[in-house]
Length: 253
Image (cartoon, rainbow, N blue to C red; front, side, top):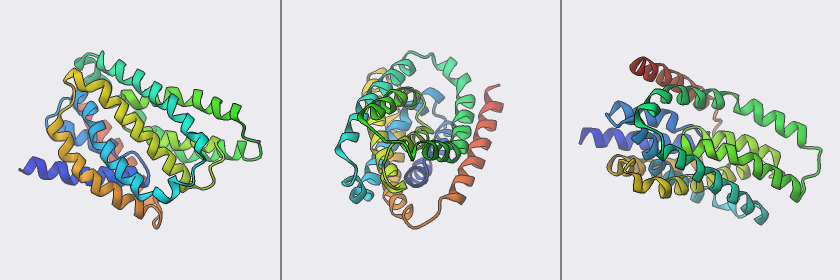
């Protein structure tokens, strides 16, 4: 009962973080590991947590989703392709090898999360005067494949990198980009679950319990993101993520 309570509260935090700034599983994944879930199982289980939370967040952003031009649906093709390749590689990674990688992966996720605003600003500034065409959309799709490969292999941190790449598009405003990011995260999570479900890598009880909290957190976060600055939340995620990477590294090495 105590473990389930921790999972529910953690899920709420993860769902809120993902809806507002991304990076929620940089906190949620170390919690699963601390509760005794093996690292590779915790990673695969994370998709069952983020999927319901992202669906709830998408509902919260529904009025912005309707404003996204229909041609952006084409970007979901490379999203699914990259996620499937990443999940396939995770499925064929030895548990021991993944355990040794996870502190570095969490650290990488934190570093990517830290530089995301700078990356987004530079890309947006560089391209804001250039016309966006179907060719540029295709180029963006090709660039998204390695990002979604990362998302399918190690889900934590995918969302904010996707948000940075959406700076290459002409979506007007952060809320439309956040909405498109959320939709892509739904497809990454769903694709990864489909690829991993037969490999006995998902702890369904822990994942679904945390997911209940993530649903409430995703809905709450989607509404909060439109009213509050994410600056302090970003700082908190970076600090907690760094602490988690150090803790996992000490435990592993």
